[in-house]
Length: 162
Image 1 (spheres, rainbow, N blue to C red):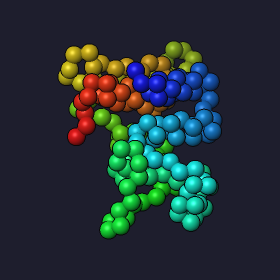
Image 2 (image 1 turned 60 degrees about the horizontal axis):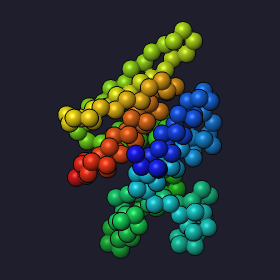
Image 3 (image 1 turned 45 degrees about the vertical axis):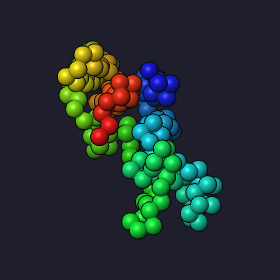
Image 4 (image 1 turned 180 degrees about the horizontal axis):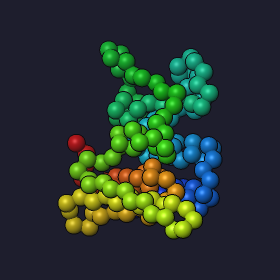
């Protein structure tokens, strides 16, 4: 599996082990996920120089406005510059927007007597495409874990890009 994907999966699992997810860890995880998904990031100083405006945490360009990993600025339709990225660690809408097409998705909740955990499973009607994220503290983290695995499976198997 891709090194960047492994790093994200380990970050998600690390949040689980802490059982408390602080804002800084969530922000860093969201940044790694956005970069993995193709968002382009300008540091605050790069953004100020490029856009002549202050972006406290930097500026982001959506993957739809990038080609080969670089932003493409459209003079006719414009290119939106984002000051924030979606919260992939806690937003159901953000997760739905990046779920790979053609995958069946399901989550399960279980209780071990002390705390609730979530499992997330995704599969495709292809051999060896079943994915599972076990024992994570929130449904969103479980789904994010499975989504990253599914996206990487598609990249490794050259499928899914439409």
